Image (cartoon, rainbow, N blue to C red; front, side):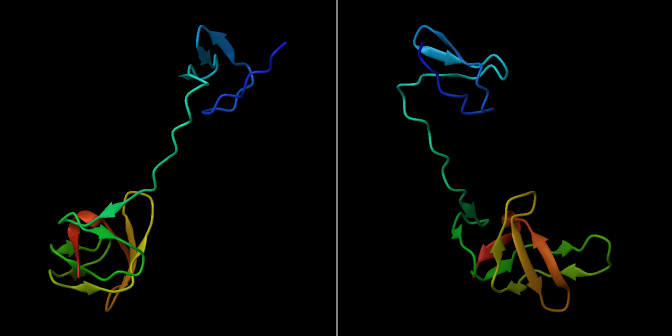
Length: 112
């Protein structure tokens, strides 16, 4: 009896063969075992102009941004230094002078 590999999506061991494909009955994932598994590409963050951003870059705000839960506003042209890129709804974790720690979206900044 041959042993089949576990499902790459849900790690189920109840995999069965159907012709050249392997099928997982738990998550319905189908794959060809002879093909190499696609590797996930590293996420690339880009600013409003399409420039690639990296941790530690400096960016400039391109639109007035209201700070939620406060009457403060981050004005156009505010320079933010030493950004950290994160996964999630907001892509940039930073500290803005006069406001403090906050998160920004990459669509509202340009690389300085």
